[in-house]
Every structure is written in structure tokens, then in C-alpha cells.
Image (tube, rainbow, N blue to C red; front, side):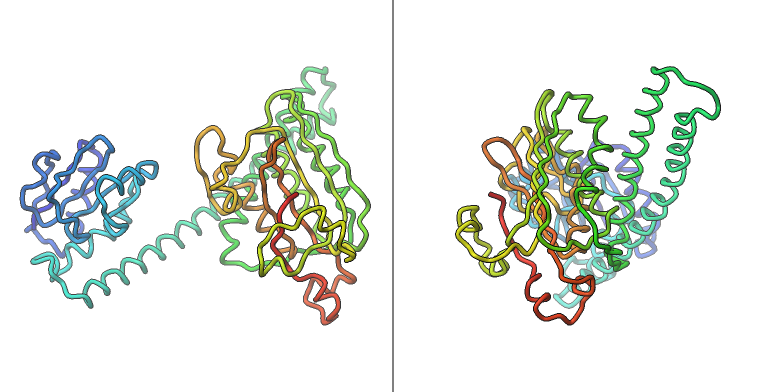
Length: 413
């Protein structure tokens, strides 16, 4: 079997050599050669392309997934598809791992395909099923490793925050104002890292461990006050003014205070990051009528329509607006998805970490979170349903309450 690697990356060549050597299917019959794009027309059983946008592929190539495998950087995917017309079956994202590359090489070196690359449809389907299973196994291993690593990461952060608090309380001796300021900033940075670690841990185990919030009746304004205290150092650094305007809730709110506080911190942290120096952040909370049929129509519910509507509020809504840059319209619908990132200076997703954890928490509370652009800047909003009793949120049988709290899709106004 002959494999051509079209790449100038020595590390990639070394990786391919190691993978081929570990495949008993090949024995000693495989030849791995590095060739230039100009020589790629030469006959080979498999071509592995290290794709770059400035490389021109020969126009006569038959891009059979069993004969051509392309390693493509994520940012170059659009250019790749435009220049080659190849399908997804040919593509691996760079940087490619040993496990992923070995999995996708397996169909090419299987007994039938290694000789003729003319396996029938059943054999190809079986290879795809095996590949998909392997990828799922690798993904689960990755998730388990990430969960363990982040769990271990949180312990020293907690200890470091405790030591900062110990020094600030001055039992080991008095501190001057400058020393207190440094320790205070250190403690806030540690807390920020701890929140990120907790978010990563929750996201990594969220798909495997189903949890329900420990809800209690509470005042969401207390959560906001704590969140403002946590976010104050970051706002002060950029001289950002934060103006809260929270009305009384017309019903009973049941939520887990720590989690709702986390939602407010994450959204405010995102707003501080993208609000320019001397900018502003406005927070408004108010009783809100949550339109049930929005789940089916997905149409905007305007403020004017709500004022004409006689329905009583059945939820509490919080809008957090800032004077930062707008979110690209094509990313508004998925900015809260896990690990979403559209890159560039206007990327407000932060890799999907903080906002994804917001969506997870609000969904667990039977609410909804979303974002919209307005002339003054983006607005991040979420709603929490009001309940007549704690049992309603935990699956009680009060039919009136259950009807009142049906989840819907709404839009900021």
C-alpha cells in the first residue's frame, strides 16, 4: 500500500509514521512518502493533504473519501470547500490528534479497501459505523478527563482564595492600603477563575448527570446585589457605570440563589468585557407576561402588545444592556450554545463558556435566556417563571399552575 503525505510539517509526517507502524493490517507492505502538491497526481492508494488556502490542488483529482483525506484548519473550512468542492467525509480538523487520524485511516487500510478501494456499500457503512463508535468513545474519554482535571483544579483555587481572605482579615499582622488593594484584586481574580472552573465542570458533566436546582423562595434582587459586588472590580477598572432598576416581583419566585447569581455574574462579566471604557451597563427587572403561544409561533412579542394585553404577569424578566459592540446577527441564535465562538474582536461568546452555563441554569429553572441587538447596544435577557407553590417547579399536579408556566420563545423589546 502506498500513502502520499502532501505536507511540509515534519511533526505530521512523524505522527503518520507512528500510526502506520502501529497498524497490524499493513504489516511491512506500506510505503509512506512526502510529496509536493505538484507531484500529488502520482498514483497512490491514499493521499493525506495538509491543506492551506494558498495551495492549488490538481483539477483532475477524484476526491474519493477512501483515497483522499484533508487536514484543514477550522478557519479555512470555507475556503477549502470553495476551492475543492469536497464533502465532509474527506475532512479532519487541525490540529489532528493521533486517535482521530488513526480512526479515519482505518477504513483505508482495512483488508478490502487496502487492496482496491472498491469496497461495496455494506463494507463502507460498517467502516463508518465503527469510526463513529470510536469517536464517541474518544469523546467520552475526553469528557471524563476534563471533568477530573477541572475538579482537581478547583481545590487549589479555593485554598488560594481562602489565604487571600485570611491576609485581608489581618490576623497575621496589619496591612497598608496598597497591600489590601493588591490582595483584594488577587482574591477577585481567583474567584473569577473558580467560577470559570465550576462552569467548565458543570458543562462537562451536564450531559451525563441530570441534576435539578435546589429551589427556594427568594428575592432575585439579593442575587443581583451579590453579583454587582463580585463584578465591581472589573467595572471599576474601565470606569463603567452600572445602573440597576429592579421592580418588585408580582408573584413568588423559586430558584437556587447561587445559580441565579452565577447567571447574573456571567452576563455582567461579558458586558464589562465588551463595554468600552467609560461606557454604561443598565439592568432592569420587572414582572412580565410570558406569551405561551410563542413556543409555536416564534414571533416577536412587542412591548406595545403586552401593554394592551389584559393577562397578568406570570414571570419575572431581567434585561442587561450595555454600550458595547453588537453581536453579528448570524450568531445571535446560537451565542448561548456550548463552546460556540465566532472569533474576532467582536466575539462575545467567550468560547461559549460563560453564556452556555447561563443557558443550562436558566433551562433547569424552566426559564429562557436570549440576546438581541438594539441601537444602543446588545441586550441579554432572561425570564424566570413565577409559581404558586414550590411543588409546581418540581413537577406538582396543580393544573392551573402547570398551565401558567409553560415555556415559550420570546424576544427582547
